[in-house]
Each structure stands twice: as C-alpha cells, then as structure tokens.
Image (cartoon, rainbow, N blue to C red; front, side, top):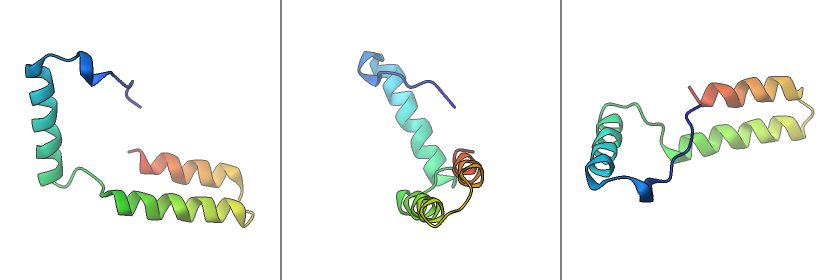
Length: 66
C-alpha cells in the first residue's frame, strides 16, 4: 500500500497533477465507487460477526486494495 502524504505540503503543480490523475483514473474505470467498497466491507464484517475465519476476512479485505 502507498504511504499517505500530506497534500497540504504539495506545490500547486503537484496538487493539480494528482487531481488530473485521479480524474483520469475515474474516467477510465480504475476507481471503485464508495458504495461498492462500503458494501464489500459490510459483507466482510458481517462474515466475521457470523463466525467466518479471520484469515478469510483479511484475504477478502486485502483483495479490495488491489
């Protein structure tokens, strides 16, 4: 996973470039909509609460981060 950065410290050029990259990712389907991520996480949490092995849940959640 990428290290989090403080975007407040970025130059205007870097900030604009990152926004443009994110926008292009969104247009090209490389971004998962929040409601899809939320649904998958809710499912994983429900499975854990219903006795699913934690290893399976961790594997499921890690798959979301690809």
